[in-house]
Length: 120
Image (cartoon, rainbow, N blue to C red):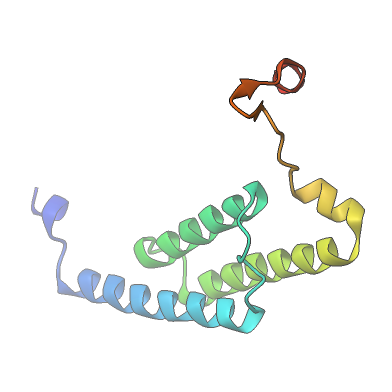
């Protein structure tokens, strides 16, 4: 019953060290990748951000994920995000694939029925 609330100081130390090193690694990788990596949030960026958070949580809490495995996963996600961002700036078809265009649904307080129907 004691393991539910406290499993010992070594486990807490492992979580603390993993959290600090994982966080520092994530911040360093994001700084290296540049400001455009997560600068303009769209649905694609949201997915990557959630994935980064999930990987960081796994690094911190999972005993089966080593710090180096987690750092590699973070680096790969950020690298792929950088590649997609770089490509979308240079190729319009990539930009159209990964970003959505906003739709005007209301104009001057009036609903635009045709625009609303397209989104159904």
